[in-house]
Image (tube, rainbow, N blue to C red; front, top):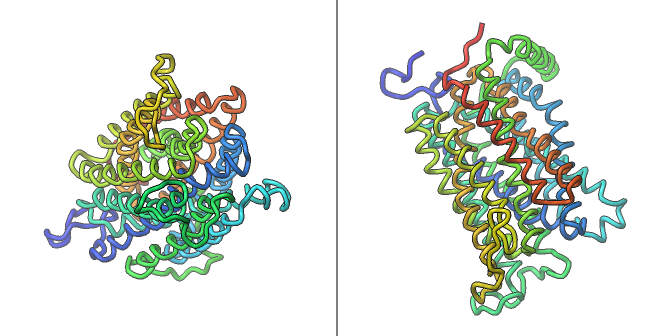
Length: 474
């Protein structure tokens, strides 16, 4: 296959003419639309609020979040590969992206009404858990359809940069929204600084945790707004002549054929299996990181926002430079470095607790400064170490997507990126289930989180045998 058109313009990863810069740069804004929602709702603000305030018990809350993601993961396992294959058959991905984005936005906007009082009056936690499951499933669907566009639109020599830029924009969006929430809703009325408002904007009532709940509507509107450039400017595939019913029938049949012919795609299969483990472990750190830190160190929403701001800024830098290294060193080599480093750094993070480091070494518990945030040695060390983890973590996320685009069959991109999404969405199945059950059994958030290290190590071992070469078929 030629690497360029007429010897000058590089081909896309799919071997076709790539999109114009407006098309693939607009595609990166799709990541900028999704990631802030995940950062605000899942990692730093709403899920910790749900665990600590709505549930009222950090240990039980961490377990419930794990079970929510487990059910979502099982649902995705049963549906994602078939949806991807059906999308391949219809030829167009934008209608699928639009419909799933709308579903996520509706669920996320509704988080504003989740309070301990509404839970007690509305039939308990089950309706809320159901909404969170639906939000997670629809969010995973948007990721599948968005990622499946990459092989066709990205020039082969810029794929790593484009993927890394997308994650950088996602974290930039997260930083922007966290700054808004911090200075408009969380800090006013809690600190005496001349440049901070005396009261939260919009009449937000901090006593009822409205500063935590407002991230739902904000993230929902942001998601819709920044998905528009993808829908308007990123080129889509050609619409097929098949009806939806015919596409569904043909797509389902093709999934079964792919599974039966799996020996022709063993390299891809090994990679997906490896990613299932290392991605489970790494994304599990994100899902439970804010919940763990708030439970262990007692951080409130202001501290979690500052923590998230700095972490997302570190991740943004990691995404950009990770994309550069991806194109320079190769996707697999960059990914191996990122995942191995993440495992070592996360293990060190787990060794940190109030007055303790390396699981047994005692350190001072006295405040190191007069600021009301992160004023002990343990908190500062955990904070700093997490910044390094973020750099390698997001490099791994970006590079794993590029590697999938390089080794999967171009004509089956949506189906294979659905399998890719499934291998990642098992993060909502295996890792949370391990964390939930381990946390329950040992009644310890730290031991529950330690299960993630095992998953990352297994993933590294499997990844070592993957070849960075396009898939063949017969």
